[in-house]
Amino acid sequence: MNALPAPTASSRLRGELARFLLVGFTAVAIDFAVYRGLLWLALDVHPAKTAGYVAGAAFGYFANRAFTFRVGARWHPRELLGFLAVYAVALAANVAVNALALAVLDRGEIALALAFVAATGVSAAMNFIGLKLFVFGADAAPAAAPRAGAAAGDSAGARTTLSLVIPCYNEAANLPLLVARLRETFRDERVEAVLVDNGSSDDSPAVLARLLEGQSRIRSVRVEVNRGYGHGILAGLRAARGEVIGWTHADMQTDPFDALRGLQLFDADADPRRLFVKGRRHGRPLGDVAFTVGMSAFETVLLGRRMWDINAQPTLFPRAFFETWREPPQDFALDLYAYHQALHQGLRVQRFPVRFGERAHGHSHWNVNWRAKLRFIKRTVDFSLRLRRELRERPA
Ligand SMILES: Nc1nc2c(ncn2[C@@H]2O[C@H](COP(=O)(O)OP(=O)(O)OP(=O)(O)O)[C@@H](O)[C@H]2O)c(=O)[nH]1
Ligand SMILES: [Mg+2]
Image (cartoon, rainbow, N blue to C red; front, side, top):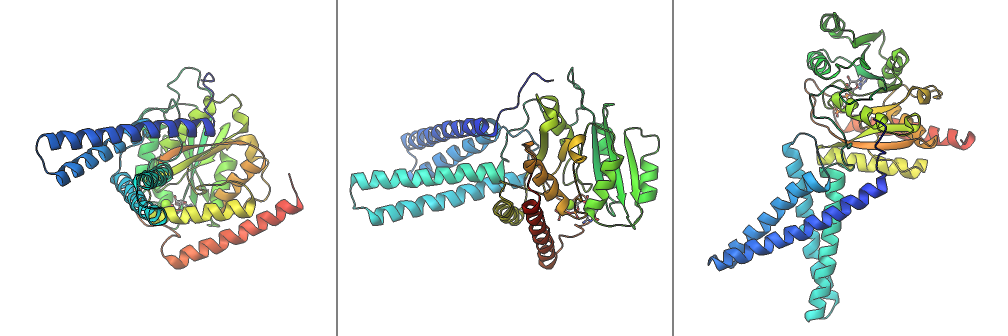
């Protein structure tokens, strides 16, 4: 499993850009061929132009999905909506830049050509950034990511052990689904799941006892009084036995199988002790993405490290890294703390795309309205300011 060094972020970006341009040129060729072909068949100009454009865009969607960004995850209608939204915004920018350029430049053949190049350049750049960030996820799937449903450890030589902590707070309705998925995927003896009943006040203890009877690789620990998301995760991490440890969520917004895809990155890495792995969410509503963009930008500026999609799951790292943590936060800021610590201590941060859908049952425990969002923002800002103060007092 150690044979393949993971591609660096910049070489992957160059590859994606080259493939995106190739797909773009081919899409234009298809558009043109369909348009001319239909004219030749005596169709009117407007329907022929529309059919050509639709054929080119359809090709662009499938080719960018499978070839440019190599999305291996299951398909979701939101992805197509995201694609159409990105194309629509880029088209609007194309028309606007063209009009602006023509207003500034004189009329004439050269002005027309320059305006066309500027407009196409802007819309192509917007398409690429939009598809990469919001539609297909940024990083290509790990080279050897197994199909959903396969168990970890199928490949010869795989050896890193994993403990995945899953904090559960009043998730009784989701636990049967979660445990079924874990039983389906966590079959290899080198992986275990530690479900933390984080002071739940619903039926979780009884449901867990029933579901986990006779399970050796899925176990639970109970925190008697709920003291926050981070507190529950930390209790699970302390009980974990794996060399690689980390967490994901219990509400089935993320597939626990993603953690096994992440584990492959450790197996494939030449120096897994210096690696920090984190999902990168796609398939989310645009409002949530806007929130993520704002939070990422804020933390990047405040803490001076490039950060993106801080609350994405799963989060995986070597046990030795966890042992360096001093006073980690007890609430949702734990995601930020772990990610920031990894960057601060010079670990290599590797991301991989994960599908992030709707909760299976119940509703979010915090993200229920704008007031709750504002409270979350305030707590995160307070924690970030404290973190920055500490960094100034105790530089690495
Ligand atoms: N809010 C909260 N969540 C907890 C706690 N302990 C464990 N969790 C789990 O943390 C996960 C994330 O919580 P959610 O309320 O779904 O928050 P979210 O996924 O960020 O928000 P949504 O996208 O709106 O669902 C879930 O699996 C919860 O069960 C806790 O003390 N507070
Ligand atoms: Mg959730």
